[in-house]
Length: 535
Image 1: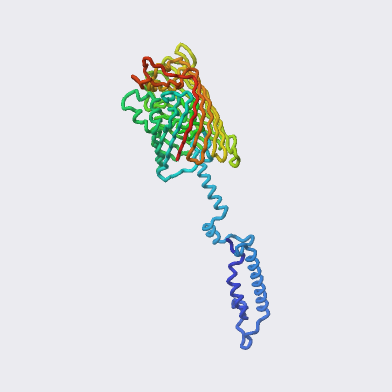
Image 2: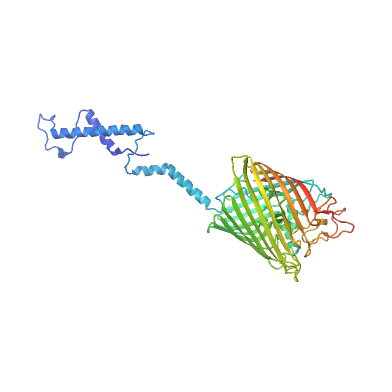
């Protein structure tokens, strides 16, 4: 709000007007009168004084007209500042009390800049495969951000195994039953740069995930029991360096295979083999370095390949590089090396690379088809030493390698209320070192089984395709229907006869049972109905 051009003259205008309205002359400075008037000449005015009074009266009338015109033209009834007038001291104080649009805009820009300086905060990443799609926290405090997850499903297996047991998957385990795959309760703690995260692991995951880790067989203290009810548990510290550095130790999720351990975050329920057969967690230390808001560099020091402990005498190392240059592209590379991850074979060393690109190629929020994206993942790896070779059959042993890919295309409809995903993939894993052991007679990764061997040179190729439909009435829940077709080059999937002896598991886990043969098939077709919740 501004003042008029001659506001400091208003008091003199008012006083002069009062004098003239009373027929009086204002008291003039002493230098305008040579001497006091003689008696009888008090009403006489010299021509010079009369001329000066006339000029003063005209000036007052001019100022009054200007004041009236300025008030009339001002939209709020306050006289406007005339062009060329310097800013008054009162204007600055007023602007501090009532910020102008420019000031508010600059403050908002400063807030936006501060937010965009946070790693990857410059865009909405809820469209990514492997990322949760919740945009608003249900509850949060300065100290704790809670998180609750529920994953319940019903699987219809067209092979109709009589023991209702499904093998060859790290996400699906029973057929023709309603099962709780995962119940997670926990969240994130954060205070004074100190951070921690805990998520429980109840339901099928608490049994099926530990059975795929053979490392607890080495040594004492039952590591699989100690950790089975925890999916994530770590503590760490955030350093205010660059765009942030986090140092965490404990159990944290693996990024290898792109898909999240939690099905709510994924485009599909049953991911392809390069995801399902690669590790879901690491136990160790990670350092997350954010040089810019678009880049993360994360080295790992871990006990081994999805291992609570070490398999042999050495741990593994690895890391991730994640780059998101804009809102529609995400590129990630995960690397693992040097782990001796075959129980009882300390000289066999593993290497693995897992690389993905995700592209959002269509984004029209106001249209019926509002968004579309695809993900492409390629994996390659090998083992050498201990009777196997990375580079083909040789005197050192048969080829022991892994090569695979998966690709998915995702469409969103009606403001993300519905989703459709089509995709699949393929792997070739001679030596079968990343093939999940079927649970024949209770077999585990430690026990193995003579019914499905993992010897050097054992061939294994597999491929799959899926179609997924999601109904998402809220950002906190997904109703999912999915069809899966899976195939392998050797009998692998549970058939009608099942994988359990008629009298139940007999003898040691995975052992040979006289008169029993598991019913294994090369093809499996399934329907999956799931309800997924995340707060």
